[in-house]
Length: 260
Figure 1 (cartoon, rainbow, N blue to C red):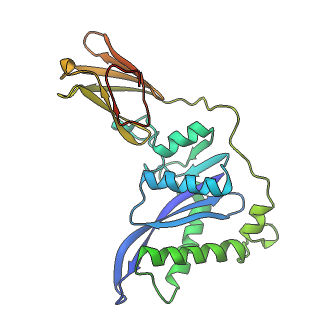
Figure 2 (figure 1 turned 90 degrees about the vertical axis):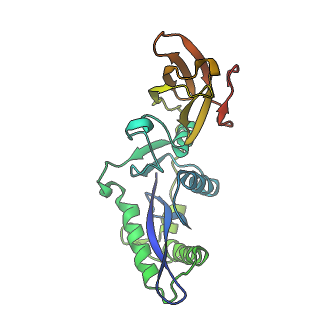
Figure 3 (figure 1 turned 120 degrees about the vertical axis):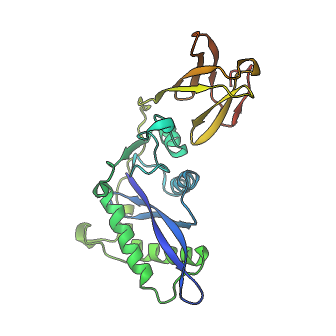
C-alpha cells in the first residue's frame, strides 16, 4: 500500500523574506515508511498526481493499493454535484490496473497518519536548513537530500530493530495489484442540455469530453446514462436514444456518427 498526500512550503526571497508558496507531493510505502517519491510544484493538480504515481511505479513497480485523503486531485468518487460518481485520471488508471483505492474519511487525517507524520518530519528538517530555498529547483535539491538521508541512514523508531526505511523496504515481499478485475464500476446519471453547437459535455478520466449529438438537437434536454466509458444519451422528453458510444480517452471531442 502506498500512502500519498501533499503539503505546503514557502520559499524564501534572496533577502530572507517569505517568498512564493509551493506544494510538495509524497508517495510513501505504508509498511516500511520508505519515501518512494518527493517532488515540489507551484501547485498540485490531478495531472501531477497521476504523473508522480506513474513515475514512482516505473521505478518501484505497481502497488496493491493506495491510501489518500478525499482531496479532489485524488478522487471525485465521493464528491457531490456535477463531479459525483466520476473518476480523476488517477482513479481511472488505478481501476484499469486493478489497484485498490482507499480514501480516508473527511476531516479525519489520522487515517493517513504515516504520511502526515512524514511530512511533519520533512518540514521540520527543511525549516532547520541554514540556506532556505528561493526557487522550486533549490527546494527539489533539498527534498532529494532529505529523502536520501531519511531512507538510507535515519533509523526509524517505528520499525523493527529501528531499521532504516530502505532496509525494511528492500527486505520485504511486495504486494502487487490483484489479478481479478475490479468490479466497483462507476454508474452515473447526468441531466444536461445540448448546446448550440450540438454537443453535450461530460468529465471523464479528469478531462472534459465533448460528445457530438448534432445541431438539430440544440437546446434539447437530455439524460446521460454512464457506466465507466459507455455513455447513452437520451432525449429527456421523449425517451429517444440520441446516441450510444464508448468514450475514446485519446480524444476530447467525440464526433457524431461514430462509435467512439
